[in-house]
Image (cartoon, rainbow, N blue to C red):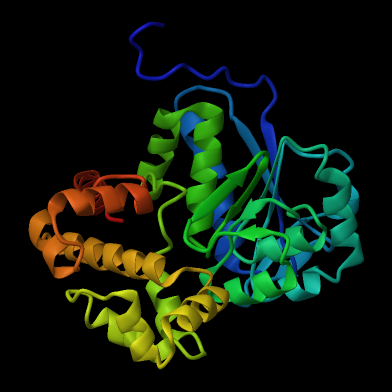
Length: 337
């Protein structure tokens, strides 16, 4: 269909099964968010007289699972799941530590992972996938707050703290909580096309669709509040973004030599000082754009400089220009997101 904006997807004759793994003290929204994305796709298909594209279900080692919010979820027991699903998604939450020690749960993931078309995790669910070795040597994402712990426990995983979700082959991992919805909208777009995913996003009144490489909105909070020698430095940087902050100035502020500062900073934060400064400035500019500030003024106040420099920085950091970001933000406001 030459000239068509999108190649039509051919819907499967049999709905794709989506299994979402829950466990005691999992995060409720890590389960409910993805579940609702696929359920809404089914609702819209029914209304349009189309076959349902998905068969989503919650699975667990027991038939009832208490989430960390206190709400219990009904689940299909693992021993009642004889065949691998199309897509297997692991939820996150503080209970993931116990899940990583659950022999039945680990065995289920290890047995089915090679057979599923897609494997995914939401938030700290990446800890469970990493515990099985499935993420070894792969790119992955998790909640920014647990990044340092994840790196220490799984040094061979190529953790990326900035993106809201990461795809490496058939394995998808996402950042905290609501990023699981972004991930599942991307999975659905991969299956059914952009228009179908947009329709679901509008129905859910969410932002469609944040690019996977868009930085987590809490990234500056991670740096400013993290324990360690650079917490005060980050607070000072945030108040001085309009200045020319050379490496030697940052090192002096941190009380180190430039060489020692660069080495320790990268080891502790996972970023070079220059990369962290660039990200902080992009985030500051983005916040100013959210307040309807002109692009040129946002570039100046954030310390980035010119509109063209801001455009290049936004493309490198968020995969979109400031104008495109502002357009997406306007759409989100119209949708109520």
